[in-house]
Every structure is written in C-alpha cells, then in structure tokens.
Image (tube, rainbow, N blue to C red):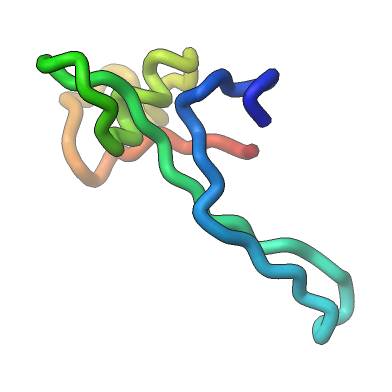
Length: 72
C-alpha cells in the first residue's frame, strides 16, 4: 500500500468474510498528514488532497458533508 499511497494511509484492521455469496474483505484505515506544528495527525481531507484525490464537488465550499471519496 505504501508504494501506491505513500506513508499517508495506515490499515487499522481488516476482516475476511466467507459467510456470504462472494468472499470479500472489509478494511478500516486512517489517513494522516502533518498539521501546522509538523506533527502527524489523522486528517482525511487534507491527506487525500495531498494524494491528489479531488473533492466530489470542487465548486462547493469545503464542509464536513463533502468528504473526499477514494476507491482503494
């Protein structure tokens, strides 16, 4: 994952589901980036922006409802 996204994405946990029609994995992850004090903090919107993932509606003002979406 680090080759694709750098060091901004960290896997928290994952679970393999075999009890449904199609085996699949659920993954939880966190995005981080450096804050104003150069400390790493979990900041999904800023980290995805640094990775080049655009906001879903770039003309709208940034708000909590407009979270960037990424297909990992």
